[in-house]
Image (cartoon, rainbow, N blue to C red; front, side, top):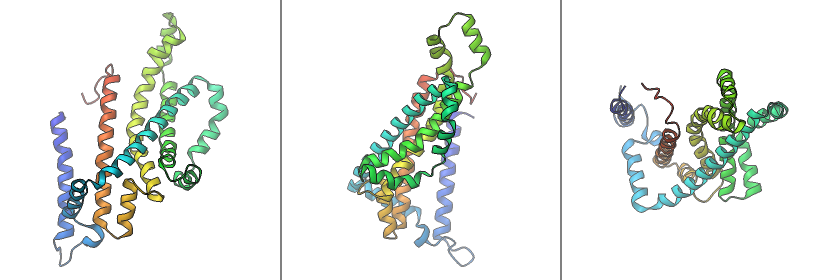
Length: 259
């Protein structure tokens, strides 16, 4: 499927979804409105709320704070995940010793950690960043670890036969293998970094998209809640597109899977 056709199909999904939403919240079917606007709002109300936020400039401050928290969580969590994942993959004994502890830490419910981080780090940005890091780290860590472990033994043996040093193997064999897995995890991690920031803001903050959504929810402003989620979704897509651009620059050697 060509790129323009793919974009058209994606756009059509959004158009159909919004049209159904408008139909079910605005038009009586079998004598009643199936989705009462009080509980589900309407596309026009949500759009008006988004336009109002950007026209007044109110949303920029909150968007900037959430962006900063998300980027810090994404960068710190991804960097730690890549470095430690690569280190564990190259040190099997170390990985075996810490394996149960890593799995135990990964199993902890992150939402439970949010109040603890707020207690330790305060209600500023760093408690939200810490929560986002815990979400991003394990996704990247496990993917990088598996990517290095998945290096073909025959490729590794051929490299050593050709006289490649450990440094050359790391640069030309291990890192390319890990990069494919790493970028696969980064696309997922973008969303989780934002989730960490927004959940932290929702539970305790005075600014950010999570705070905006929490305030709208507290006043039963359903349009405001949906508008916040819409801005959040566009925000995540924009960051994901940046990750895709970087991925294409670094993985130029990899054939396009779309064919």
